[in-house]
Length: 82
Image 1 (spheres, helix red, strand yellow):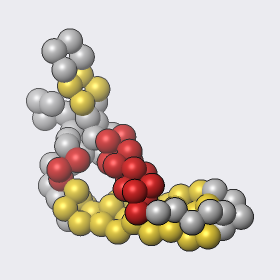
Image 2 (image 1 turned 90 degrees about the vertical axis):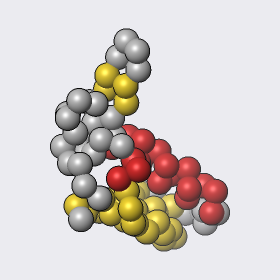
Image 3 (image 1 turned 45 degrees about the horizontal axis):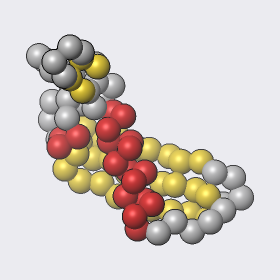
Image 4 (image 1 turned 180 degrees about the vertical axis):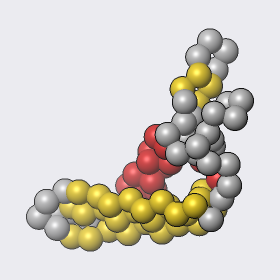
C-alpha cells in the first residue's frame, strides 16, 4: 500500500453485536471478518483502495466479539491502537 495506512502497529478490535436472535459462532466470525476487511486497504494490478484504519487485517492482534440479545439490531466497535 506504499505507506498509505493510518496506522502500522498492532490493533485490538472489540465488537459487540446486538440482535433479537442468538448468533452462532460462525455468524459472529463472519461479522468480525467483514469488519476487519472493511477497515483495511486492498490493492490489485490496476487498483488501490485506501485503508480506513490500518494497512492489513493481520495487524489485529487481539480482540473480543460478543453477542447481546436486543429488540433492535445494532453493533458497537471499539478500536484500540496498541
